[in-house]
Image (cartoon, rainbow, N blue to C red; front, side):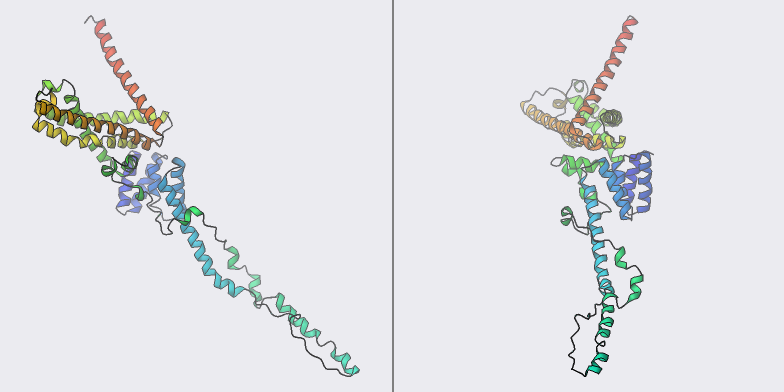
Length: 388
């Protein structure tokens, strides 16, 4: 099973609450592809130990140093650790006060006794008496009242002082969850494709299912086939019903085939330019980039239903001409937005910049043109050699 499929199953299991099963799928995905960023990120949500979670999030930052979800997860773990150390120190303060030595007053601080003059014979015998209390009073000042604790290591000696909290962690809540740091980044791509395209593509690549990717490719193939028939002379030779029927049958196959071939070519070009994305992530980026074309399918159906001849032929009625030209402008805008999304999606999938994504696209187009050139050129040469 491919690593992207294992990652998708692990994410689905974690969403369902089955951490053990999710951990098994994600570890298997990382064994197949140690560079799978999403597998490392979601694996941190299946591990109970903070140190293991920290390791997974650090691997994410090693692959993508600007990953905001991983940074927030590490900040939450650091804040929680600092809070635990502070609470442990607060619990040890009564013990420290109990173990602290109680200082006895020394001979210097003892009150001076007033002596009464005595006869010379008695004075010689009473003179050493003030020194005896001084000797007994200085010893408790140097030795604690509980000497047994001086022979045992104090519990406070093994407790490290609390580390200072960085300024970046002060604003982070102490209870921020570190188990699923990626959920804060998720956005429904159908609603955010238009105003937050980068966030939408990142969420779609990371969290949408593989089956949805192929469904989008199939629908995009139908839309692409209708566009090819309407914007060329091919649709004029067929009726609108025939075009629609062929689009429903052939369009999904063409869309899925194009997704497979384009994913392989773009993944290869991305690897040559420094990208390290799995094939599933590249396919997901391409499929979700065609979402605007799928949103144009209802417009195609309206055109075929009300203006079938004007859609695939040159309109003669002025009103139909205005309607068809307006519809074509809308389709053109959707295609341009899909092209922009394909650049953003490829950059997010390959974890590279926009220039490298553009270079990958140009290299892929060059390979496709070169392949068709060799194909048709070779066919022409063979026909010429045979005297056709």
